[in-house]
Amino acid sequence: MEKFDERTKSFEKKFAHDEELKFKVESRRNKYLGQWASQKLGYNAEEEKEYIQSVIKADFQEAGDEDVFRKIKADLKDHSISDDDIRNKMKEFNEKAKSDFI
Image (cartoon, rainbow, N blue to C red; front, top):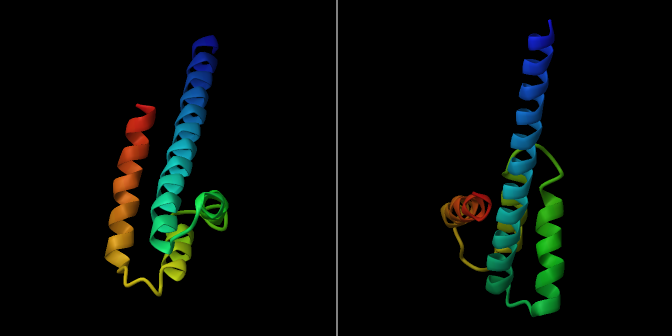
């Protein structure tokens, strides 16, 4: 029974670690996405900081990435940036964020 308990604790630790890493990667991706979008919007440094925080907070509205996508899409609607461009940036920044932690 002791071996089973050790194994269970090991799986729980791995799960917690994986979830923490996933959260960090998504937050970093959202930061990069917010920086990119704020440049497109012509924000100054202070506005950029606030905007990045709003993008990060948008990710807490629902599970998945669609809440962040909808925010960026709505904010950039007047800048001729396609859905594909936004999704490609999300993928690009996700990979960049992963490399920051690996």
